[in-house]
Image (tube, rainbow, N blue to C red; front, side, top):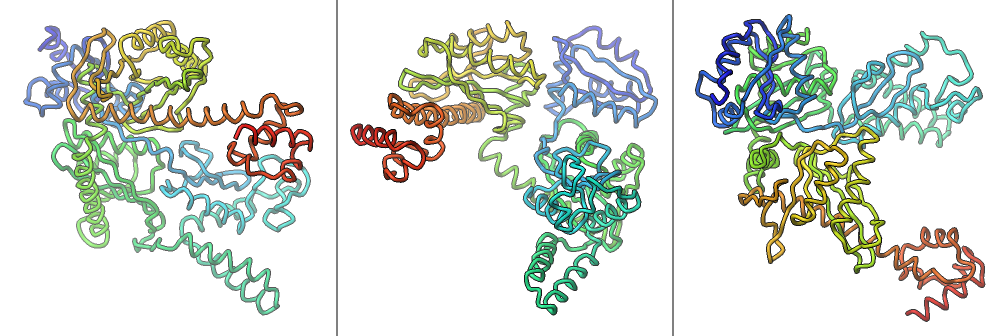
Length: 585
């Protein structure tokens, strides 16, 4: 053991349940786990042979802390909270699937149906998640049409548009009883749970009645609703005879990877299937428990769970206080076997794919080893692009869990007078970007990668020091053939990389260049367009904006006739503009 005090710490460990936090020589938390008996579990890391990945972690342990809890259940809950707070390097995290929407229905008050990206507000009942978000929106639109939901965000105290359509009882200006609201809510619940055949029959009857009365417009409206109901629930066959709300959990292992598959049944209908592949680290059962815990931190618990591992089933039953089934025969066993088959097939595909391209998680794990940092789940890459020397822009592209996270991409027009000075440009972009992040309390990167050499790296380090950013900074350098060659760490040392890691970092670098070039082209096109419009009498900012919004390029503008152009701007201005365009061409 590196730390001579570790034997003393181990000997004095408590035998109660609790959570342990492993730390490295810098005091960084590198792994968090729970135990029924803290002394027994923690001792195993040092007294037993361990798999290579765990052995590598144990070598880094300089000290550890323990938190005693009253029960295993408390330890389980605390472990999850601490993992999500500290993101330890050796704890494997499920990739964020918060982009999958839920349908949310208010539990009390006016019945309101909406789309939510997170299922953590106790005021709502949630259905989903829906990997195909379009389907979720279709269902919400349909519910708003056929049930008396409240559609208006504010109360106008006068009848709204939907009231006149017969799609609202008048929440804005009438007193609607709680019993009536609950009746509407229960009808929606029945519909969402797939138990509602009456609604379909009701509109089929309405359609036939309208046809008999020769009210074909109304009949067509009812027909559209019937078709929408059939379309939305097509393919959702009731597979469980007892029509329960249950999640079926199956996991499998291939080499050093785990495949976790979760089938979500609501009222016996398969609503959703989610698969995750993660690297195996340490004890399989312990890691599966952590992954399941992470999943239900973000997703609502059903009334029952089903899986094939008795040990994990007993633990989940205790932690969540719900029924957990371990099937031995019949339909439940068939469903579980299907989930296992899906998990195995998906994991095999995942392994084949990442053996060809190099796994993102593996690359990040190797990168954390090379740089001796915590697992970099959030990476920012910064690049500067020049526009014929006269203009420059800076871009920041973000990668989360190894994948591009495009909604956090940002571009900045360089305001410095010297557009050729990359060092000044990098300082400007980083200062503007992270000052805003800090003011908004947004999550900062674990790793910041700069495109360039030591000069660009030092410029970035000045900014991170000034702003007190707690992130590791490196730069990427290229060879004479303009291929990514190596990393330069914060000490200015070049670090040679293996082929897979080089390929992964080159992918990040190429994505940054792609975004910079795309942004550049848009900027350049706008600059050229705007410059052509300059100097024409009567063509001010407002009229320029009208032209920019109507005609997207100079080439398009050149094809416009005088008559068409004079409908947007005065004739004398249109004439002057067309003369300039014809002269320039």
